[in-house]
Image (cartoon, rainbow, N blue to C red; front, top):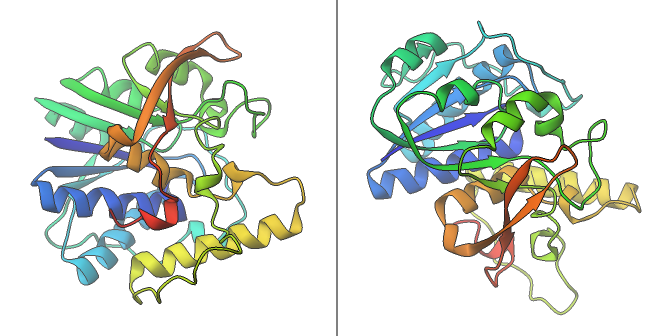
Length: 276
């Protein structure tokens, strides 16, 4: 199976990519990385994707099939003031990974694929018009939970038209409602044992950085909730790779879009199953 992974690369998308590539290495599936605009401009997202591929290849010996450059496509974006959105470097992708333009990629599209989108759906809409998507998981939308971006969930709000078109297809949405689960909290309860020391590798360094940022945020904001404490993209990746860890239900959002929403039912904390 071919996996298509659409990301506007930041910390949580990086962790999700590591999960997807590790899974694909064991299963024999191939992964196409599509770097898009959203939390960062497309040009920065592309640079981060290239750098990430270099780092993953060096440490884990696992590579995507190719990286897709969408910088020629007009895309909405909102740059958060987070230095880790730009990983630096990455001017040349790893030698065994091809780089394709978005239009070249659409011309090459064929066969069946599964698609995971962790970003606004601007380019996803056109990808879905090519070949056959057998499984579509999107990170975006909200039903009952309060919105987080101008009255909408961020990936939805940045391109409402594309979102509305994409969710007309069979899909699973990891919404703000999905993320409202205390099993996703990075905090350790007082009755929980101290965790074992973690390996000093890229995955755990990035995970530690994310947890520390989220805990700092929680301490600074008494109104923070679980959806702001967890790596959203990692949860969407788990939903994509392990659909049996989730159940789904039908709901309607404020724009009257009909969503198939994921609800987490796996009985472990995210910190306990991050490597599974």
